[in-house]
Image: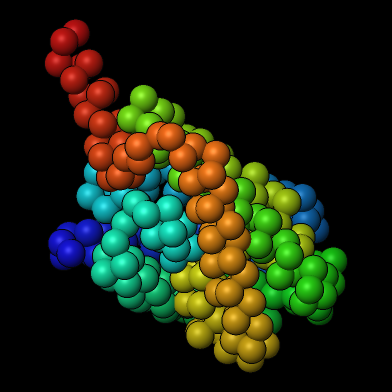
Length: 257
């Protein structure tokens, strides 16, 4: 396993937490979007989608830009990454998520307006859900949300021909997933994104974080088997190769004009 790949996964996950979870905290913790819940949902959803879109093109050629343990579960069960590499990715992703949460907390904690009630964009159910979704509903929601996201990731990175739109499709899917999921659970679909802030905030967020680790992995597993079933006759292509082609294509075009 290349150190560069692990560093890319750790850095990418940290950046996702800093910018996207940071946007969620500003919208719902500091309430910079005012009384408009819809504005906060859209702002946060776009932050997650756009940050991942940028990271996909920046880090895709290096590591495939999983930056999400659930995505790595999907690739492992779809037989597109080895168990050894998957374990390395998981360690890097969780480390990055925790580091990103600590950095984000350090930024916000320096504000005189930051209090414990502001939180750190953590996920939750029951009283910590906008519409008070219970544990069973939250679990089901996270499974379905993650299934859609990981299924799209697996499908659009399977063919080299789809490389030019892979990052866009992945980013937009994550945004859509958040638009629907934020009122339900805050939206995890990424165990590293959930664990980092929960460790910093502790309390109920840490007590409930198990759901946002287990449910996304279940959803990713279902997505992996669905992907293998639907395209069993298609030879898989590693995502890092796809994203490398994506980046190389515009560069090649530029040299010919």
